[in-house]
Image (cartoon, rainbow, N blue to C red; front, side, top):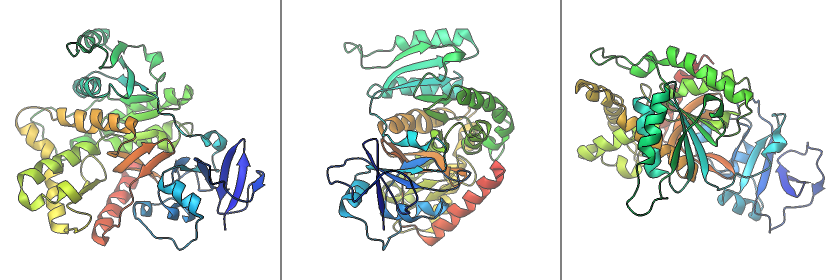
Length: 405
């Protein structure tokens, strides 16, 4: 039995009658946005998200099980079910002190993106963002410790243009360090500790964790101090534990869902590469999914309809080791990650399209197919094969250990 409330012309509802807002008998059919109130321990739950299924209204806690599409026997009024189907219901966790600020949907305006560090990854990501982001990115601010790099890329990017349509590509401008969080999305590309060519290790990314954690702490604290309300995008490796570092260092001043890690996009793209080359994996192109981190513990499913554990593990191994194949050529494998995980996935995030990135799930940042809607973050739910879910739970538990949870 739902209880309905009215707050400043906003309609709210809850599965429990425990809030002091003025009650109403029902939700008018004309309402086109709705807010679901719930209480989950904020130490293991997002502040808000887009309700994607009626079962979301009856979950006792946030968990990895949220990836599974479940049927609910609870009776939901038809107009609320329609709003859920249209993704017009936003769940708001009332355990957060400022939860009433969540009673709004995000706008569809063009977004300001600021990017930190113009090394190999940052400069490649910037190029992709410049070429792909014209419809959604209003401006790109760039900052690096080297003033010469800032000046170089401001020159180069703003001298990149279509021949007669001069305003199709986004303007790039150099910014100061203090301006980094004057934006809708901050993109962290700074990195240390990448093993040089010739020093091959099985998982390059974990070598970088200690050094990159030191780098990112400063910017997590800065974002919190400036009361940043946008997306803190982590591109540097390893993205999943680094996302958790950002949340921890912000000391609760950044919401868990504000932080997203961009590493899984290239793992999907690498699986696609091998699925195109080898017929036995071709099912991935229509039915496959990627889950988990950018590195070991990645989970590639050859199909979510006809899941084959053996083929899925083979394809996972190929995707995980693809970076080592590039390193054998004598080059660092940064172009595909910067474009597939970075520029493409970031543009899709801002446009509200399905993409791969890491998001907060019950205390852990882990990658899955998702999209950012005006009503909040939606992580895809699927009819999960048991064998696939066992692999995902194993990865989830490993990420908990890596993050020290």
